[in-house]
Every structure is written in C-alpha cells, then in structure tokens.
Image (cartoon, rainbow, N blue to C red):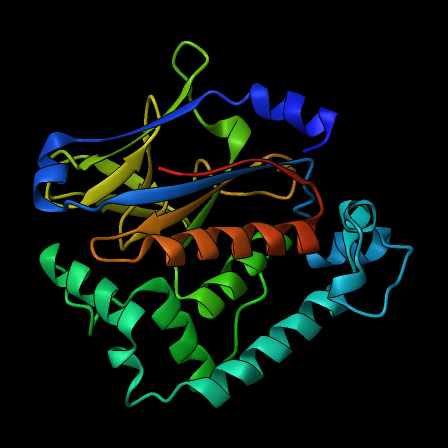
Length: 268
C-alpha cells in the first residue's frame, strides 16, 4: 500500500453490526465493504465529450484516463465479452440449480420471498442476458457492479459515500429487521411501506438498502459522485471465499471503468 493510500485508509472509520434478532434467524449474515475515492460516475454523453485518450482495451485503461471520462466503447466491449461467456456457461432451464444461486434462493424462501417471482440480482441479470436483452447501460459504477454480479453471482450495492450519515465520525452499517410501517423510497422513486419482516441495511440515520427489493434513491451513485461505498452481500451458507472474490472483482471493475483508488476493503 502506498503512503498516500495508507493515509487515506487510516481515515476510514467504519464498523458493522447485526441486530440480535437477525443473527438468531440468519446466523451467517455478512457484508463485504470497499471504499473507492476519486471515481468518475459520468453518463455516456459526458464521458464521451471529455475523453481524449484511447486504449486497445479495458485492461489498458489507467485510473487517470478513466477519471477523465472513459470511452464507453471499452465498457461495451467488456460487457459483450461477459455476455457471450454467460451464454456459453448457463442455461435457463438449469440456472436455478447453480450452487451459489441455490444458496441465495434458499435465503429468499427463509425471508418469505418467492425467488421464482423476485429473483436474486445476479440471477435476474443472467436471465436477462440469456433472454437476449443483455445487461443495461447505466453508468460506469453501476455497469461495473452488474458485470461483477453476473461473473461472481454475488449481489452488490454502490452508494455515494458523501451522502451516508455518520455518528461521531464513524460510519456504522447495520443489518436489522425493518420496522412495521417504515417507509422508504427506492431507486426510481418507488415508494415502499415495509411490513417488518424485511431485512434492511442502514447507516446511523436511515435505510440504505432493503434486501431483495433494492437500494434507496437518496444515497445512490450519481453523475457527481466521487467517493463510492461498495457493498457485497453475504447470506447464510455462502462461502466466505466467494464473498471475498466477489468484492475484489467488483472493486476492480469499478476502478477499471470509473477510475479512482481503493482505500479500504474488508469482510465483516
């Protein structure tokens, strides 16, 4: 770790806890967290207008070039390659039996969610690819998370770090059961009243994500987002090595697509 990176990492004060009721029902709840600073989350149009440098492929993109606005064609090339690999690897009829997806489906059933109607994020994206639609193009950070998700079969969230609430300068992430009647606004301004049995990820003041249903609008990555909090979700019986691999893969893709530097990564 470079001196600069070490100094930035030392400034990260983060802790994680799980509500006791959640721990009793779901014994192996974990999350992986990475923090990336000085990213670019510009949309396609802004990215293309600012980009002046070209490279032979995604692997050749430097953080400096990406931070100035990476060419969308590099992301599109990676997306096409990943989609082709997914089509060679999976089949719609047997997808539900892939071990990592089966673990997540079982977790959904335990939460009272029917995974044949509401699917794990990675499975939903893979089904989209197999059906011929392909992965959506949203922004460098979100695209990075989606590609990492279909490659590793792990679910991710990406939050604007500066929009998260701290307590005594500590970012406290917590998994708890929702309160009955608690209201959230999910990405896309979707209003949802929670029933009290949902799992939520929170900071010191508010819900950041409702497990299964998605992230909230208030803390999503925007075009002006520079610092990103990346979360990988570990569920009961999910091997730790797969969660670690997923988080590392997502962090790498964010840096390749949006530039920036990873200053913190840990499995809790």
